[in-house]
Image 1 (cartoon, rainbow, N blue to C red):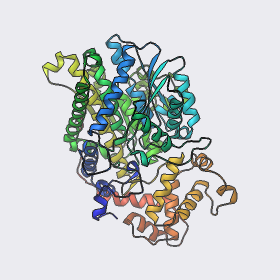
Image 2: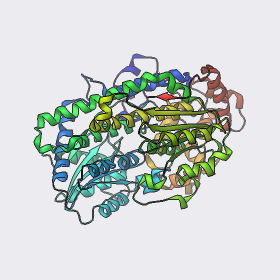
Image 3: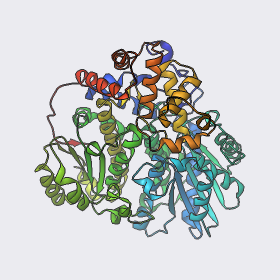
Amino acid sequence: TPGTKQSESSDYEPSLPVTEKSNPLTRDIDRASPSGIVGMLEACDAQMFQRETGTNYQRLFDDQVVTTLTEVAKRVELILKDPQDSLVVLSGCGTSGRLAFFISRFNEALKQLNRTLVYSYIIAGGDRALLSSQEAPEDDPELGMLSLQKVCEGKKRVLFIGVSCGLSAPFVAGQLDFCLQHPEVYTPVLLGFNPTHQARDEPIPGCTFTFRSVAQRLQELAQRRKAFLINPAVGPEAISGSSRMKGGSATKIVLEVVFLLYINKGIAASKKTSCLLHSGILQHMREYERAVEMTYQHREGIAALVENEGGVCYLGWGPMAFLGLMDASECNPTFGAGERKKRWRGFIRGGYKDLNNNEGPLSSLGPDFCIAHEDFLHQVLPSLTDRDTVLLIYTQSDDLHEVVNLGRKVREKTSNIHAVHHRTDSVEALLNKLCIFDTFWQWELSTKLVLNAVSTGAHILKGKIYRNHMIDLQVTNSKLYRRAARLLQKLSGQAETECEGALLKAIYRADKLTEEITSCDITAHTQVARSAKKVVPLALVSLLTAHCVVALAPSVCECVRARGNGPCDYKALWVLNRTIQVSATSTSTISSNACAV
């Protein structure tokens, strides 16, 4: 239990995979001040780089992990040296898929070197998933396989990198299984952050394999360098299961340290020994570690951005802008932040022209897919109030005159305008394009950390987090369904069958479960849940009202006491929890309108 030595040990919650554990460092994050929240996030992000001994987990700096990265780097080299009919494909679901798209921008670096473009991406749900939650395709292994076939049509050599932070996504498992069936073309790489024995082992409908069985086959082939498994543990997420945070950051770090080896000055890997490649990867990882440390030196500036009451808009320039688009897209499924007046939106200067995604403009899908600065000016700016927050994201190389002009227009509507910007004061760096190029990737990581802290902290203060759990997550695929059931068990103390029953009643808005409901599989339940709101809070209050037998935090207990034996009203939980959170947070005013990192 929290507060005991067990909660600090590596065996805390031993039945759960590392990526699903609750982090002991953040168990009281829902009661922390903005500065306290940022401090806890800093401690969690530092766990990515821990040099830990005496555990069963591989760590990021472990020799075996770095050696595997070196071997993958050599496969990248082979494709770069002979790119004809060759491809490097990055694939994932949700945040992992968005990062697959983002990292495939290494093609831009190849353009600068006059090299053939070899990087491609796949995201479950297609390009609309770059900007909105598309959780259902994550459960479809056949869709994953078909999308891989389409991207690789006509290719004779493919390095496939499937990213699944929890080693759990059937979409990616289907792709990896397809690669294993065609070793003459595909070299599969699996990237995730659980040990193999913690990979998801539930049967996948219509398949003879599970994710774990696929991971085990990869592990066996890795001994002969026919496949690769990269799965260092980076510690539990600050918000339990929220792999958009450390999982996303570690994904970015791992893949970029491999690809950067062949960008710097265009040096071919053939000129480097394995020892030099190994040391190069370590050097890049240390630079990323330093970037994390430097980011959190601005803790108070980040904390000042956390407190906001209305909607939040990220206005970005260049590649940094996509990090704003990505962070905003994740708020609704993670925190249930879909309320129109409190929605998080991201915008990029030139819209889809700057985004340069495979499917092109998606504006016809609705207002949420209108992402240019012009769209912000026409659709959002007229209705902004002082309750809304705007965050500008840019670097010194962007058009600062344009940044200032847009900032002035925003300030006419709201005083809550802030900035995350990057600059270099080094004359040597200004004269050395390579130095700026290297630094750019670290700027991106720094920006991601800041935006994750801002959106996470803001939703904590709004009562969207209980202890360090996403209490209002959407139950839109099998992974999230299982996570919701486990969360209800943990917070209510009730049996698994009771909790799943309460979850189903909340999904179907039913007082009693009919045979028609109980005979359906999880896929059917999650299809219904996509249109249901506040599923987990409703189920939790239902359980606590009927069985108030466990001592929990005041927000839940007071809610139960307030309701007595009356009907369950999940809104009471949120209203009361928000009141408690506001009284517990710092009342200091924001002293700066900029956070320079």
